[in-house]
Length: 347
Image 1 (cartoon, rainbow, N blue to C red):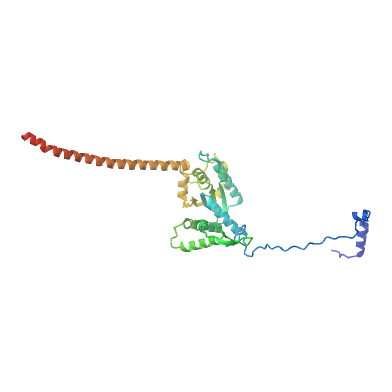
Image 2 (image 1 turned 30 degrees about the horizontal axis):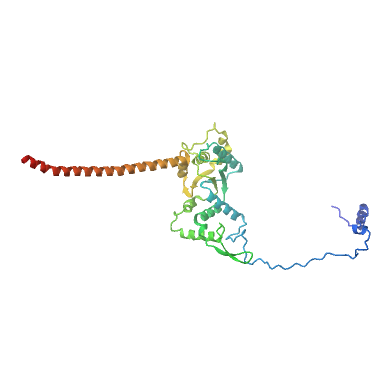
């Protein structure tokens, strides 16, 4: 690479090429002078800022950023809040373990799940179609475990209010009961210490052994046995109750990519209305005929049959008592009439 030699002649050459700049005169100079107006120049002066008496108190806490037990702006904290909201708003959830699924396999699984849910007929009790709101997503196991602890052991309504300072310096009572608060952290910590004596007393204790390894969940906005059965037929088929789609009905289900992804999914359990169900329990929920309406009809029929049995039992006891009393009355009447008739015969 040749050396560069700095020469002052280059600058002069550049200025010569650019040409001489034409001086621009101000509009005030071009105007004719007015003798009535003073020609003294006036400059703008900065006005001194008036010191304000309003100052933010040193212990002021903005309402948009309440105190937290952990940093609120990290990704883990946001995942924790997302999972707690998901657990509180999702009445039906399937939990799967997955093993090294590729992006193409996940796409094939979601495609088959959407197709199976779209074929579910809409019942008369459902106002809208919920097929588009059912999703399968991968979760962070440790964050999901912590979110389950908060949902199970933390009650926001029991948090006592504390004094907070406003902008004016006045003290007001404020309740900090969000999922990242100190109250939530202390509640979970105290519950885990006291729960060692009775390990099976909560839903978390029953579900925590399943929260191992990489997990994925299928969330349902409502408890719909028909949609649950359709999801089980695709993600975890078990004939004859939940047979997989045939090759003639859905050829894409039997493609190598879809089958490779489905073989890496393992159903470990579920959660229905806050209660933990195993695989057999989830299949029982999915096998309810006619959905929740059918279950309600079965319950009504069982209560009616129980009421009829109780009524017949009570009526039978009353009838037997009445027959006993009637027979006793007839015996007593015959005993009273017998001697009188004998005396009349002797006379």
